[in-house]
Image (cartoon, rainbow, N blue to C red; front, top):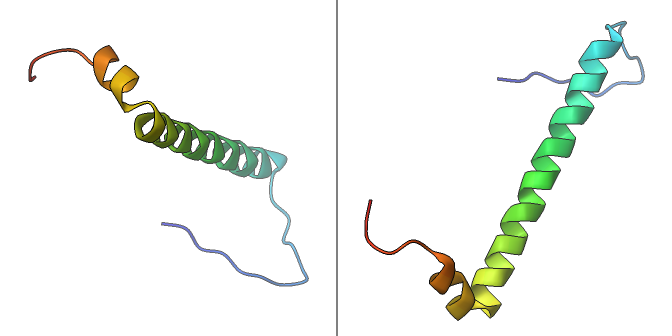
Length: 58
């Protein structure tokens, strides 16, 4: 759960808080890009993607 407030004043927080927030945003953005790329590949290169998947059910 996250709480946030938009205002002209930023209360004092340790720098690590900001580093963690930026790093988490970067990781989420990277994951979203990977998902978009996977979707694009599956849509436009379906045969190649299906051929690379393991055969049989789990």
